[in-house]
Amino acid sequence: MKTVRIRVFPLLALAAFIIPMLVLGCQPSSARGSVQNADSTRKVVSANDPAPADGTMQVATLSGGCFWCMEAAFQELRGVSKVQSGYSGGQTENPSYEEVSSGTTGYAETVEVTFDPNVISYRELLYVLFTMHDPTTLNQQGADVGTQYRSAIFYHSPEQKKTAEDVIAELTAEHTWDNPVVTQVVPFTKFYAAESYHDQYYQRNTSQPYCQAVISPKIRKLREKFADKLKPE
Image (cartoon, rainbow, N blue to C red; front, side, top):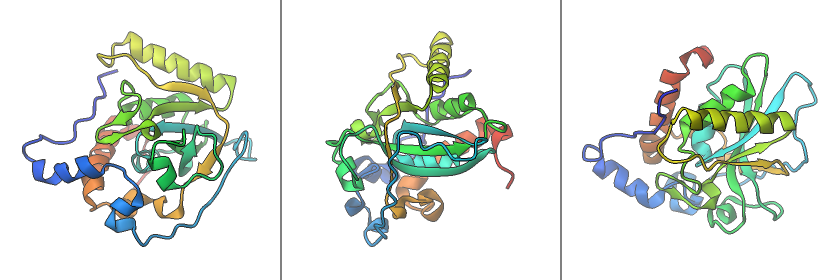
C-alpha cells in the first residue's frame, strides 16, 4: 500500500486562500459565519452498543480529525447506509460542539458509520480511515490541533479490536509512514450525535474556504484510491 500522506495544494499557489484556514481550522461555530445562525437541535445518542437492530448492519465508530471531513468521505462508500457526526471518548454528559472544541472534555470528533458487511468490510472502512488522515499525529490533523481531533478507533467487539490491530500492524510492516502509527484502539463506551447543523456539512457548504482547502482534496483522493468502492452517481 502506498504512502497516504495528504497533500492539499502547493503552498505558494494557495497561500492567500489557506492562511485564513490555518487560523480557523475546524473551530467552534462562533468562528464560522456559515454556521452562526444554524439550528442547534441536539440528537443525543448514548448507549453501550449502538448496533442496529437489523442483524445485517454493523457500526464502526471512528475518529480522524474534523468530523466534517470523515462524514463526507464515508458517505461516498457503497454499503454505508448512514454516517452520523458526533462525539466519543469523553466522560461528561451531553457535550456541545463548543465544549468539545475547547479540548477539555475528553471527547473526540467522531463519526458513527452504519454499514453492510456483505458489501464493505470493517477492514476496508479502516483502510479508508487511514487514507483520509495522518495516523502518526495523535492530536493534530493539519491546522486542527487538540485532543478533540485525535486519531482513534472505538471498537464494539473483540473482532473489531483484532481487525484494527491487524490493519495497524500491516501498515506498519509496509512502512506506509515514516513515523509510527499512534491511533488509539479503545473500547466503545458512548456516542453523542452532534448538533444538526453539522449534518451533511460538506455537501451544504462545499464552496466554503475550509471545505475547499481541506475536505475537497480528501474527497478527490478517496475517489481516486477507492473508485471501486464508491456508490454510483
